[in-house]
Length: 268
Ligand code: LER
Ligand code: MN
Image 1: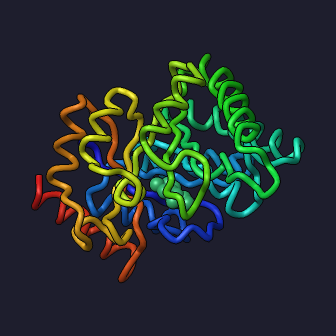
Image 2: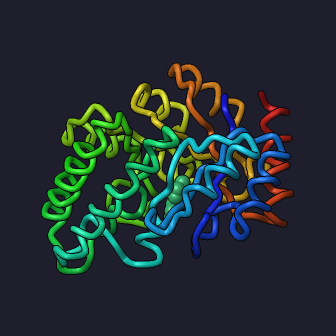
Image 3: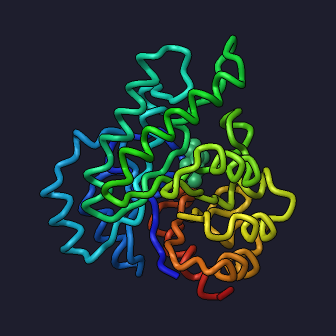
């Protein structure tokens, strides 16, 4: 199991982006704590100084397993399911804009809240059609570079579109793209799944990426989730990818990140 942790490299209100702020300081901390990867939350890939990023990642020997894209929704309101076609198009273009970066790092592109929520007055069937169209277009664009997209089921308090693993699997069938899979997040699963382990096993090979946070969205060990059992079911699916910490930085990012590793070593 390879461990990574979320680091936002641009302005982000998202509370559970564990590390935020100065890039080099954070990469140095992440590496010194024993993580092998930094999952980068990037609102706009056009603003990334690739040369600097590449140099720092090499300096600290860190991989980039995944790119989070949700801040394009959080900070700019871009969404695949907005009633305004200009916003939908901008959201699709934004995801396509991540492909060169993802290709450079061999990273999964995360489809989180950029899918949007069903806005008042929008027919849910219509929203699903927009979502499927957008996903097909992005998957097609990513396919020549062998880049995979991972849709994250997100709990009902954050979105009205795809809250649980079963809905995610159904969407995979409809989209019908080989490079389209799921990102499972234990925080959301604790709210939406009847039995987390069963849902993980049902998703099986469709799991492209994995987020960990405890039931209260603090670091694993600070809540009541059974990570021994959860990670055992994940590895029983044959998953050999990354397990990425995405939790609230309390009391501070470094302590939370350290406590995460300590807890995982205790239970594994
Ligand atoms: C992002 O990975 C996530 O889990 C969502 O809660 C974003 O709001
Ligand atoms: Mn997540």
